[in-house]
Each structure stands twice: as C-alpha cells, then as structure tokens.
Length: 207
Image (cartoon, rainbow, N blue to C red):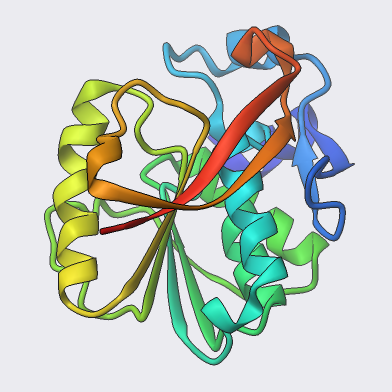
C-alpha cells in the first residue's frame, strides 16, 4: 500500500489550534478515516492530540529547551512535537513512531512546515536512549501496556542526562508521583476522539 497516497487522500492541511505556527495534514471526518484504516487503534497521525499540542506549545515558548540539541519525539504521531522542536532551533530531530502511515504523515507535515526531520519506524522502547539530549513524549500514557513500556525508557533517558518532557491530558496511566508539572494548558481537541472540546493538559518532567 502507498501510505503517502493514503494520507494525502484522507487529509488536508489545518493549522493546529494551540500551535498555529504549525500546519498539519488532518482528517475532516474522524469516523470515516478511522473506518478507512481498518484498524482497531485510532489514526494517531491524523489529529493534533492534546498532549502533543501542549508539548509543542511549551517547546516553542521555551526554545532554550531544544536549541542546538539532539531531540527525539517519541510516538510522534503526526510529527507535531518534532516539527515544533525543529522550528525552535533543535540541531537534529528524530520523529519515531511504529506506524508506517504515521511515518508518511510526518514526512508530509515536515515538508508543509519547511523543516527537515529524521523519521524512523523501529520500536525504540527496548533500546537505550543514548543518542539524544532531549526526549519529548506527547500523550504516551493512554493505556496500561504502553505506559508500562514507555516509563522505563523515559526514566533511563532522564538518568542518562537527557531533558525529558511529557505532554499529558489527564490520562489514567500516568504515574503522577514520578513527575513534576512545568506548565498547564487548556487545549482544543476533537470531541469525537476525546468526548470533550477542551482538555486540561500538563507538561511534566521526571522528578
């Protein structure tokens, strides 16, 4: 399957509500696109999720977090956070997501915003996060299994000296006691995905 053609067919450019500096290809009809993917999981690459929006906003408002540094956007989805990091002056940004359609969407979105990213689809969570100065993770605590896998990776990155930032819209599986809240945002979201029009979303770092 031509994933780039699929993304182009089902999406069009939209400014990101909380981050209007960035334009992403997104779906107008959530349910129709989800059905077209023929997958149980929603198309994470087709919408700017709350955690990613908050994290991207924070990075653009605090460019010193990433300027001149090597950055990983973990579970990148649409590539929003990776694009924000590049716009904020990161020296090199890797956008990682195991979904091959996500990789196609990230590549298209990077071109829309005139930035260069390295896009990878390998599963990084079993490896050591040694190659990055900053690890950014937007909305990665959405279920128990993902939380159990991502938390050790983030801990290892922080222990190794990387700056680790997480964007989270009050997901149930975030271990709040392990994190410090740096900022909070009221993020516009798609009500068909979140059963809400606005989600209170925090940017956090490990304690």
